[in-house]
View 1 (cartoon, rainbow, N blue to C red):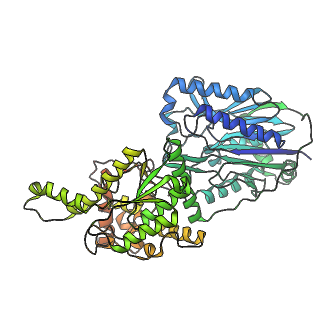
View 2 (cartoon, rainbow, N blue to C red; view 1 turned 45 degrees about the vertical axis):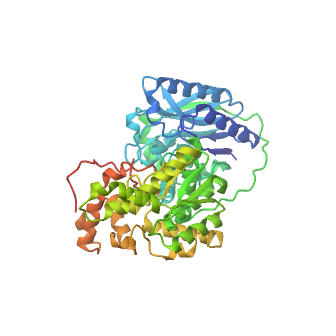
Length: 576
């Protein structure tokens, strides 16, 4: 039997922290050696972090990354390693280095560069054009990077024809709520079509608006998952692969014989690394058990990890949140506490004359439940002073939205003053439904350094809140907060439905228009009222300027505002 012990190091790299990332890589190499790993992989651009963006225009950064790679090569005594880095030759390449026992055996350059959604790799890299198959202990190994595996005509068929029995694919694949199922279907198809083991090694961690979920996996020649990494956490996945399974299955599959005839002239290079191990004695592997998460649990975990890494990687220690007694601020507070600990979260209640007693009580109860400090700073006097100051300028006009929004702007000023004084990062609490429709106040409730639930529609906010309470077995978020009709409480008896359609109507329309680019007539054809659809579309279109000024926030949908969706602010075209 040909058994290869494979390791996947699912690490949390930090963009630009070359020394820290290198130290993390070397630590994982030590752990893998202790477990007798033959071949260890790391994620895409593990040395630099992903995505490095315009750091790649700094020649010194690229040189330093190459120096770190050399350090890793020299550290590879007794183990084969595949690690992602930036290769600088006649141009820059998104690359994977293949090393063993202190020697660099080859470099693979990514062939398919994504240039859609959040990706912009053609801005920085040249496409690769050649691959290789490495022979390690009698096992043929093909190496490629992320997007290369998404194409049926990509490098995999050529690597298989050249003798690859295992494909090592290293990745930096950002999370969205549908991504895991897409990956599993993809890997099943590629492995089953080519009768090959596939190792899919994904990055984990938060980087600005992106969250990488890990959930690395190994599938066998039938497309079955044989090993899986944790969700939203670092992990070292180690598994033994019976490579002879591939040989047995291929003997009964004539497709590879026929296809090989037409691909002979394009076969990759074959590179020998080592023919035999120094010892076959390996320690037994510990039992592993990885729990898959459902969609809502995944969203919650993504929000926690994205918040934790944004705060910590940017040098903050504590955060401050305006607690209104509403569900949005309550959920943000819960996420912050899980991400950072209650000692690092401060809530601020800022009641006005329009704040209900119930909302103030809910904010106090939430703070007690979470064990966080709660500051109470009434804004009535400050708000009235603002009105008095503006009275000459507003003379002769009717009170309306401008006067209401002054309350939000007073609160924003107070939160930013606390941030400025104590070095706390302000977490804003607006959701995607509000961001989409402009139902948020610039320099008011939009003020902040990080918008935790910016990409979470209001209906999903309720689902995640319910998950939080079910998971803890108690009303961590007060039930009254969940039950009461949502309201900005900027005027007496105000409800969100005074200005917006009900959220169970609004959110599907927003998904169709924002995420799926459907036209007004398409959405009307889905059964929604024509005037409602066109009103929602007009709100989305005219508030692009607001969204450009919003803080970054965790991406959890297939198309978030920001990197995913780039519409001009000055724009007279509208579907509505």
